[in-house]
Amino acid sequence: MEFTEKRQHWKKINALTPQKLELAHRLLEKIREGADVMALLRRHPLEGGGYLNKAALVAAYNEMVAAGTIEPDGALLERIRMKPMRTLSGVTTVTVLTKPYPCPGKCIFCPTDVRMPKSYLPDEPGAMRALEHAFDPFTQVESRIRALTNLGHPTDKIELLILGGTWSSYRRDYQEWFVKRCFDAMNNINEDKYKIEPKEKASNPDVELAKAQAINESSLHRNVGLVIETRPDEINPDEIQWLRHLGVTKVQMGAQSFDDHVLEINKRGHDVECTREATALLRAAGFKIVLHWMPNLLGATPQSDREDFARMWEDFCPDEIKIYPNQLLANAELYEYWQRGEFHPYTTDDLVDLIADIKPTIPRYCRVNRVIRDIPGNNVVEGNTRTSLRQDVQAEMKVRGTRCQCIRCREVKGKVVELSSLQLHDFAYQAGKAEEHFVSFNTSDDGLAGFIRLSLPSNESPETSMTDLDGAALIREVHVYGQSLAVGAEKTGAAQHVGLGTRLLEEAESIARANGFGQLAVISAVGTRQYYLDRGFERGEYYLVKKIV
Image (tube, rainbow, N blue to C red; front, side, top):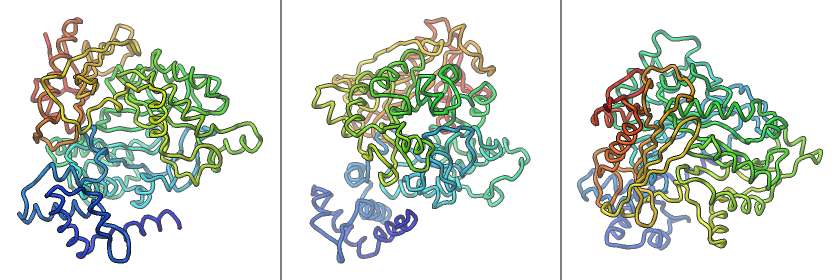
């Protein structure tokens, strides 16, 4: 069955009929009385086979609340919400893909499929959704918000993740149109004149984008982060200014390796120094930095990968990483090397052993977003096919008695937080010619309730050419963890909305002032501007700024 047929089949199976909704109503009453959700669903199979899913329970809950049959009940919604982990980091991520477009890279490990942007396959979950919507940005965002809402997730704080290979290689009028249409979807505005992508430069497109951004500052679905992915050799002062114009706050880059020889034989097209300069420039401009790292490239060994990974923390020091073990795919040039016996993929055991070795070395200021690409195993010619590698690594580390201290492993998620017991910590380190401060609120058992990233540029920091940043210390991120809550919502024992963000801002201001800075600049997402404006910041050209002397 082709991937499009699979998706349609799945939708048909999960269609919510009146009979399913009636059953959901009955089961919901039992759940309100304390019944175990999954056990209850298993005890009530559907006629013709199968079971009711949690989405049906959420639909029944929403219908009963709308009808006034029951009062809104956050605790009940938590019990029936599907995949609560999706929003336990405090925001709701919506992923979209750009259309197929030529990539300047010639990497031998990268798959090529004419239906997809470079490096993506049509049966990856996110890519499948994008292809179904013909890569239209509006419908991708709209449908994803609708689906997340139906699954019981809050959608008022959206981190928009734009994937598609090298964002910087797309025409800028397309980029501007794509971002505006994403904002239109978050703003629930669908104007006919913007539905078709531009064939040539539109009149005053920056004005139209600015309008959409202004609306989003107070819309129902606020953008609290905008992420793109690109290559290190695409980053320069002009590019970072353009990214700020679009509203970008986080940049993902494929570092892949910190060994020039490995980069060269894999035809990456840039060297390690290029990655170093790009990360330093992004840091000087306040962006959050995500680096992709690939073990098992041509020319690497498990031992050389261990040494390579250690080099990441010598100066690059990303805020987040994605570990993407190289996977052998038939539609990549690397396949020919494998056929000649010049390349051998690591086994699953090799990868588990490697990642279990390196994961405990990750600094406390970094978050590990992934340890494997979500590529269906049928695409992999030889080597690891398990997409549950993170769980395998965690099991191995438990056997070894080791632990990872990265942000994802320590964030409080849905745990109850005793606010009076939180301790404030300031972890300082050097990176990219700047002094970084990772200031965090930690629980008594080392859980992470919230943090702020403060960057203090030096005289040697790269020049950004943006006047907002002259003489300024930079706030690159403020993040409070726990289940994503609606703007203004409160929940007993939740880390969000209890003033931790404000207290972190006050601490950052104190550190910056003590180090001789007279101004703070924050790289605010469009939907968080009002938060900072309410705390004494003012609008600059690309940043929000505050005098602190």
